Amino acid sequence: MSEARYRCTVQFDAEKQVFRARAPELEQCQAEGQTRAEALARLEEEMEAQVRNMREQGAHPPAPVDDDACTGEVQVRLSRGLHRELVFQARDEGIELGQLMSELLAGSLESRRATRGGQRRQPSVDHDGDRNERGPRDRDRLRLG
Image (cartoon, rainbow, N blue to C red; front, side, top):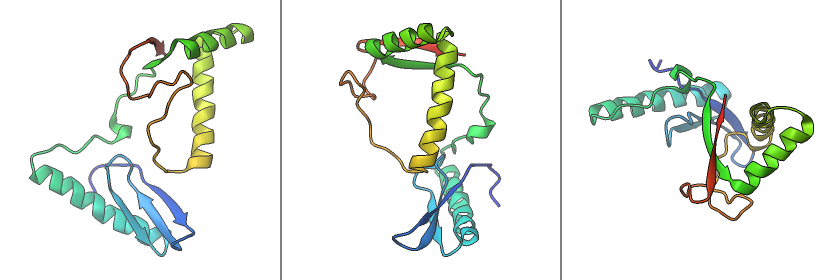
């Protein structure tokens, strides 16, 4: 068993009729099997091999997300228009902006997990037409906490 505690996801691929297991914290680390157990066992082997290869090449494997000290604060960049709408919504509901954003993020995460599963997505475009991977251009910073 791998010494690192990486999270794993398992989904059934109806098209291929196999279970697909992934370790999202390790890029390209996935395996398939006829059963969940088989897919997870193969994934564990892939994880061990990938971590071993990284170390042999002098690289450091990423720390598992559960080992990170999450403080509850997140800095996020968003368009001025979205920032304005969030402030308006918070005022309309009579709550602080941080509380509104925390509630929205929690609900969106649940919804995303239910509908998208472990699928990766392409870079998106926000409602002002800016690609999300661009820099700060006309974006504001908010601290959630």
